[in-house]
Every structure is written in structure tokens, then in C-alpha cells.
Length: 128
Image 1 (cartoon, helix red, strand yellow):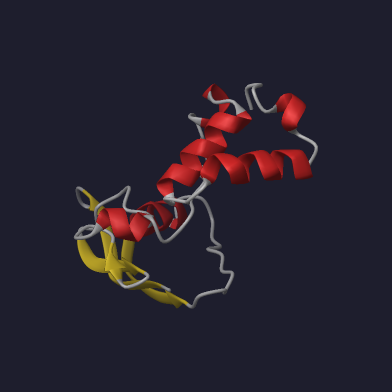
Image 2 (cartoon, one colour):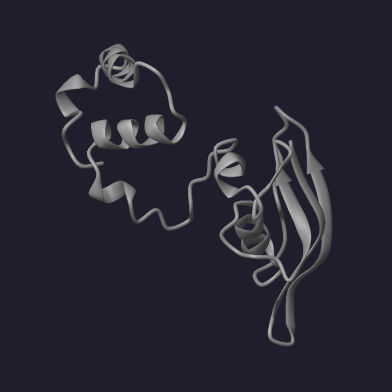
């Protein structure tokens, strides 16, 4: 579950996000809609722990994203709008990276199994 409680982010005198509260239950899909400058990206960055709130709290799976960032970040997946890292990795490297983040047992065996399942073994050492 994601809980955002009274999230506010100010940049100097400008309030990019002002007093946003929302709850996303496990398995729910949600979206943030609004015009440019409405605070959507700032809110997402706050939810992922990339932007510290001016005030308010954000919890993921019960973990505060600033007090317990490793556990909070381990409970969700995030693909940034500018994913600089991915283009520098091979498919196999990316899968190992993600498996490591989630501390998956037998990661190499599972990676090979899924690469084979999707017919990607021949491309697994190519840059994404």
C-alpha cells in the first residue's frame, strides 16, 4: 500500500505540491492527471523517495520512504521518465540488477529460464 499524507513540496516560495493525501491499495492501479506544472512528477518523486517533502509523509508497505528508504524502495518498482541506466546495461545485467534489488534467490537460474522462455537467450548480452 502507498500512503501519502499531507505531502507538500516547496521550491523556495513556490509550492509545487500542496497538501496532497492519497492511498493506493495493493493491486490497485492509479494515475495522476493534470496540466504541465501541476505537480505530478514532484508527487511521484516524493513517493519514490527521490524528493524529500517540505512537509507530510509518504509510506510504502508501511515503511516511511525517508526513515526506512531501503525497505520502502524494496516494496515497489519505479521506471523514471529518463531511464539513463538501462541503455548502458545488457538484458542479462539488467535482470541481475533487478534480482539483486529484490534479493531473489537462485536469480541466475531464473534469469536463464525466463530468457529462454521468451526466446531472448541469443540477445541477452546485447545492450538494451
